[in-house]
Amino acid sequence: MTQALVLDFGGVISRTLFETHELTERTLGLAPGTLTWRGPFDPASDPLWREMQADRISERDYYLTRTREVGRLVGEDWDRMETLVQRTRGADVEAVIRPEAVDAIRRAKAGGCKLAVLSNELDLFYGAGFRTRLPLLGLFDAIVDATYTEVLKPDPRAYELCLAQLALPAAACVFVDDQQRNVQGARRAGMQVVHFDVAQPARSYREALALLGLEGPTE
Image (cartoon, rainbow, N blue to C red; front, side):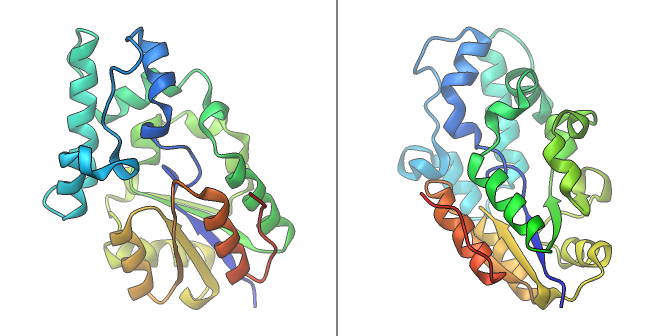
């Protein structure tokens, strides 16, 4: 049976905003160390992140708040989430893509698996022209983006839309996401799952590829 590797984008394929504070500060002309919110890398020091993890605010609420904060730091009014990402990552997309992701995606493709992105905000964050600037996305058989579907994970319909585009049963798909709520949604949908650890990307990709019967990347 054909299998599929289904990936979230932000945090799984790309490095998180938390990991690229230095790049953000340099690009925006901020002093080193200005950005202190660390999300999953230091939840104890990020109360807003803990609010999101407790489902008291949405993921979009979290990033919109951070976007507005950074906008104020540069003396501008940023009221759209994509502003932060596009202003800090638009010039060099490849610089924020995880090498472990590239390796795993190519291994899965070579192993005969289908590939899909299931994202809540791919084009919303990166802009509609982003896909043409990242050739890696050309390897994918399906890209399901809630920017257009308006169906956010972990809504069961989000996974159903992806499965329909892949034309595969849920059990044939391995879903990878860094948000536990989305992983739980995929598990309820019948998919095999990996809760992606942003601090150990190679390990998470090895786990995903092992579920597909493939060898994973090394550390």
